[in-house]
Every structure is written in C-alpha cells, then in structure tokens.
Image (cartoon, rainbow, N blue to C red; front, side):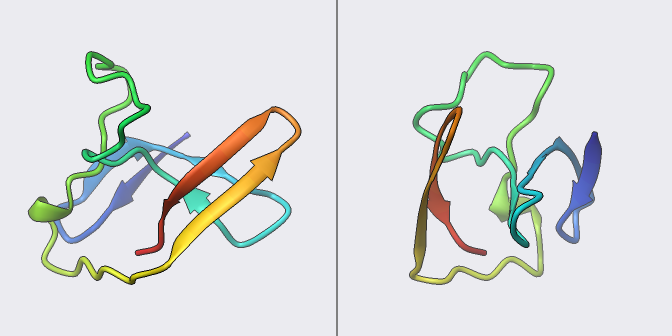
Amino acid sequence: MHVKVGSGNQNLKFLFDTGSCNMWVNSRICEGCDKNQTESPRYDERKSDNYSYYDFVNDLHYGSGSVYGYVW
C-alpha cells in the first residue's frame, strides 16, 4: 500500500503496525535500507514544509524482526 507523506506529497510504501498507532516509512537517512531500491522510495524530510523532528527513538522488536527509528 502507498501513502502520500508531508507537504510535498511524497508517494511512499509503508508498514503499518496493526498492534499500535505506528506507521513506519523508509527515510533518506536509513542506514539499513537498500539505497538502490527504486520500488520503494525513501522519505526526504527536506522536501516537506511541515516536517518536525523529535529527539525520541523507537526501538521495537517484532516476531519477524526489529525496527529502529526516530519519531516525526
């Protein structure tokens, strides 16, 4: 599924955590993301006028793997 994110309407694939209110998108600063991946572009906060940074990190562990990232 795709969702448009930010004031620049960046069209991104996302992972929705059905057990919480979290929605995860790949970021341009993601170190573990495939940099050559063209099917799933990464969110670029520089292209959004309404981006906010919070100094808070989520580190969640799921049955199939872990997710680590900043809240925005």
